[in-house]
Image 1 (cartoon, rainbow, N blue to C red):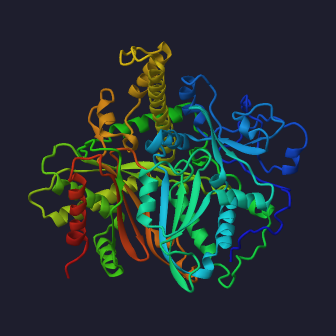
Image 2 (image 1 turned 90 degrees about the vertical axis):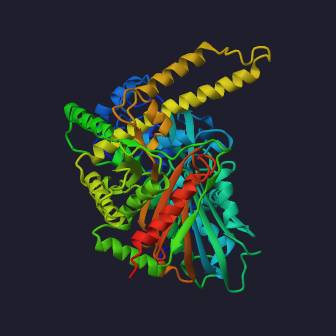
Length: 633
């Protein structure tokens, strides 16, 4: 059984710490100006003696020397990037942030996917933290498992296993963004850090807590990339026998993805149920070195994607042609009508179907040769058609979703807590045939979804396309961030101008130049459905057809396969919801099974759409489940 690290051996100093690079084969590349050396089976004792050397062994991911060079040339750096962890110490002559120069630390450049999510999360006030994730699990537990010291020990263990959870972000500019990890030198220090990222609450209403996280000031930041809360609606954690509790795991999306959240939650509950007889906390047999040594520091997804070996410039040029052709096929002409009814207000209505109904639904899908994941796409399409009588039936409906790319990564020893997602789109007709029943149409379109999904998953271009998509999303996010920065500077400059000059359109030449560059950059980018709002899609240059996505669907599958319920002695889970902070006008549906129940959880901006539009669609979704997924007999 897993055990929790405590202060035993906490005063031991680090003897060894491995942080393996992974991805492509080594490539001779000149060390970056501010780069000390790459970490590769490194003895930490060597890090504390003498000046830090440099190394030419930094590695570029496979294919990046061909697909990233053109992008970098417009950024003032002609070299393809690498994403290895590097060691920075007190003797290192250069550091992007002097606050980290007084202590040894590890740094890694964010990969393209990480950059796109990080820049998207930058903002001011309630508009910041876009895509910050949450996982909420409601459970009933025996009170002796919920002792404060126990919970801290468990979270300490988790943060030592998954170093990104206690890392920070160092932002220099849009091309210089790095994770920074400072390994603790003692268990006491590790516990202090974990305690700063954890909170226990009593008399807490779950809905109020999530509303604050989704719609209030941002909980996370560049210095706090994760946060854990245990709460209870009762007056105390010290119940005589057992009571209801809630766990909330918060994480920045550029740090990880849904699979990372759920796998970590399973670890937490496994540790929570371990040694159920203990009253002061779980037993400790691991020292600090052992915990840190178990997992190497996590690599960027793009450095681990398995792409064809030996591909040269021509092969990657072909991959780019295929990518552009596939993007041109992303045709969608439908969106829920937007409105600006007030400040963004995310609501999360959730429906759970009991185990008996869920078994019928899953069985019905199997009978028709499909799965619930495919059926929800078809159901969303049907609900839109029924709830929107005034629509353009000549254009199809496009729905975007995310792919779990972990099966396409190299089998490395580094930690799995990192983001590893790709994207795909489902395209369905926007009309119902008059000569075929709604039921037959629904099941046929579910099979169409299955076919489209299979073509994406089994396609030979999946990994190369994912790398090119990551670079595309990164370029877009850089363009948007530059524009946002221009607005922030313009707002600041306007505040500093004399009142007589305000509102006259007077600006600095640098601001105008930057705006023009950002505008030109955005105009040259091909549409990418997962990050395109309807307005942006329609404004891209010379598209043959619109590329507007109706909404996003996140199909999480059977989460009971990820949670070892039978091992949670003294704990009974009963509720799970998940989602993220959203942009204005966003809508995203989650579908999954948990504790034997089918869950549909919708996150949307209630002030971002015309009144009643989303509510009517949501009603039609639930009607569709009763009508089409639940057999009458």
